[in-house]
Length: 94
Image (cartoon, rainbow, N blue to C red; front, side, top):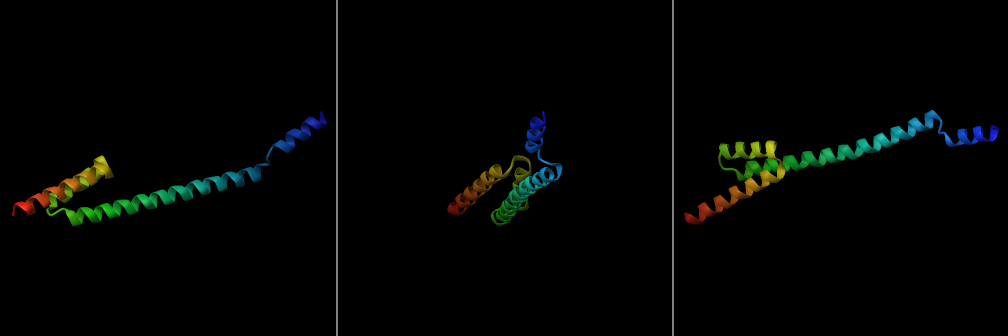
């Protein structure tokens, strides 16, 4: 019976090291999430700069921002491509 209790106590991690290990795991997850957030923010800033550069009217900018907010980055990029195509077609006609 003593042998069984000894085995159980050896398999159990004491509360302090267990807590420290969990804290390290959480810190690692937080670091990953922070990096993902920074990447997301950088992409959004680049996209907003592209909106300001590509759109020639305030209405186009507003539309692009609405698309970005409600439909996401991919849809916004598609809209900006369509704006560029229309601009190039308009310049060819002139």
